[in-house]
Image 1: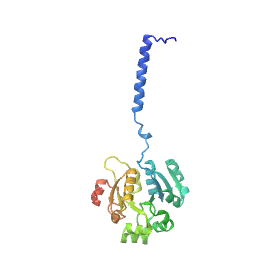
Image 2: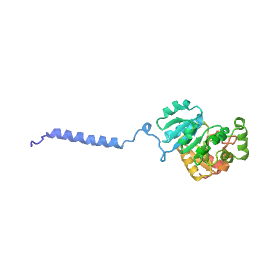
Image 3: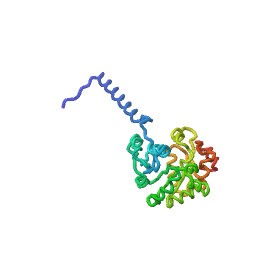
Image 4: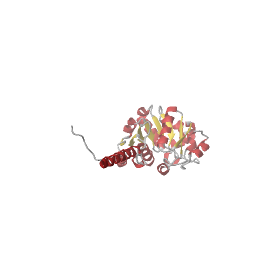
Length: 252
């Protein structure tokens, strides 16, 4: 078999090109993916149904989609949500309220508080046993008698009266939509988010969802949910987590 002869000068050039290729290849392997190409993800993706996909529900749901969760947005007019869902990609979809409740392992309620009795009546059996994250707020001038009941008897107790058998948690109540959009995942001292609940597993899931949305949870018992309701000093004000812990007297 004939031997392959390469002149000495050519061999030196060949070796230099080979070494350069190896170094360049290793740099490509070690180079991190550009930030704009990285998708935020959560360790435990969930299927989430959103009942009420207006400004609040749409904003929180969008943050969860970007964190890697699968989200079904719903409202009384689901056809109006298709453009929003299509922009979020394949993890976002649109359905009716019953479809979103059936789809979700977790349900976000982002509706006027006066809608809770009807939601409970029409979907009670489908909601039983599911984790409910309730972002609705009782506002007397808008919600009337049911809001008066909540303020008199406690928001948590009143909500459970209309949503019996659910694993109920309150979160995303006092922070407005603009702050949810602008303060999510902010550097330094994050914005705190009150989480009120008594079901340990539901609270655990809710706190993770708060973090996935870009905020830091501050947990209190459900009986204290009225402490961040409309009319309280922190309602409508994005509060840094250290200040929120002091206000609520909470250690976490």
